[in-house]
Image (tube, rainbow, N blue to C red):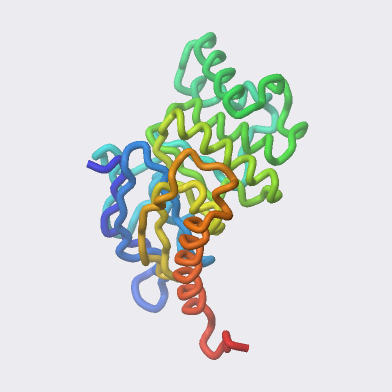
Length: 265
């Protein structure tokens, strides 16, 4: 059985018929144990809505989502989320932010401190335990957000364009950091991005979504060997995969344009 199974999911907002909006339609995909799966697609295709469904923040209109065979009906500690915005508690230190989940779970103080220190070191922020979010750069805050999610030891990590607000150099470093952590933890990850290079660089498998209503247009394995470094971004295998994904997304982006727009001009 797949770690995560999304089966024939429909998400509609508002009433049926002309008054409602169908955001997602007939979405089915599996994420295997320890797999890093990435979803890409044109703007407005419902990528974030799909992740919110898996998180249990929204309920599907039809279809089912199961994690480890259990029906997802609400948020749970078995799912850790990292958003594009940093979502840190500004009044808490780095250490306290990372300890927050274990503290809510009534973990003994000594144990949660050790876990927090471990993941703070894992994301390269040793020495910043007593710093507050306002004292950190954007990349550093996102490292804290990642450490906080990992400290809860979730069954799956859900990442919604987590590096989208970062500059290109910091973004590249965060991608490498995520791969480094994932390669020795083998945590199951479902990652949302609009960046094609990021999707191919990170993913074991990439799913391309259609324009709204969002469906899975195509899903395929990324056959580029691991471990991966930034040098792979210029390899023939990477460029061929990029052309394939770009073509699929371009087809859907054109469909999403208003009628009468001339894409050739």
